[in-house]
Every structure is written in C-alpha cells, then in structure tokens.
Amino acid sequence: MNRCLRRGRSWCAAASVLAAAGLAIAPLAASQAPALDKPDFSGRWVLESSSAADADVPHAVSIRQSLVTTNVRGEPMPPFFSDITIAGEFPSGQRSETYRIGGVGGMVSGDLKTRVSVQWEGAALVIEGSSYTGQTPRSGQWDERRQVWSFDSTGRLVAAITTSSSDGPSKTSTLVYRRQ
Image (tube, rainbow, N blue to C red):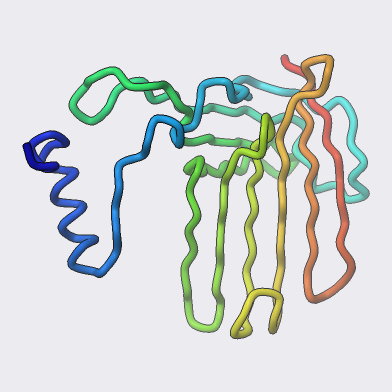
C-alpha cells in the first residue's frame, strides 16, 4: 500500500508541496515524538521572588499547554504537548505569546532577521529568540533572549531568562512563581 493511502490526503498534499520545493518529509517515529513525561506548566502563577533589576517583570503568568492525543483522522496516538501560551501580567497590562513546541522558525523583514526555537531539554522547556541586522547571527545590531522554564524541588515554577545584545553585556534573571 502506498504512503498516501496509509497516511491520508492532507499528509500527501503537504509531502507533494515539500517535495516540489526540494525538501524531504518523513513521519515522526514513535521514539522521536515528544513524550508526555514532560512537565505541564499550565495554570496561573504569582511571582514569589525575582533577581531581575528592572521593573519589566510579570507579577503573574497564566500558562496553557495544548495536549494532542489524536492524529488528524481522530485516531489515538502517543500524547504530546504541541504548543504553549504564556500570558504575563505587568503593571502596564498583559502581554501574551504562543509558541509551537519543537518548532524552529524565523523571518526576514528588510534588514532585520529573526529566529525562534522552542525545545525540551530534559524536563525544562527552552525558548530562544534572536534578531540581528547583519549577515549572520550576532552581527550588526542584535538581541538574544533565552528562557528556561522548569519546576524546582518544591513545585514552584522557575524561569531563568538570559538576555544579551550588541549594546551591552549579558544579564540573567531568575523569576520564581508559586501556583495560585
């Protein structure tokens, strides 16, 4: 039986587009699929402590992780977290970002190039973002931000955030939140 019949038309349509573009596509092997042994950070969290020197720290965060348990045809599959939405509450208002877990992407707009990567490193979720105006990362005007989200031994949510830029030295802040 050919791959299209086994996997469905939408898979074949995507494979055809990518093949026409000269790219390869392969189904995720079960061993490559994100396991549900990864932590679920979902909930509302209130700031308990911060090592940040600036006032631009969310006093609370609401997090939602989407759990996928079926494929596009509704058939059961090993569950995994597909994306995460982090909404920070600041004195000036709320800011929200949604990231695809396991994804790497970017864009070019004029001279500005951006890149975002969201990957599991053990039990920590690492969100990395960068932008630069030169030909390569860390060239021209550039900024980088690395967020490492994890739980400590008491179940508090810890966000270690490192920022660096062409304008100055790197800074790392650790934010600790308790579940509300």
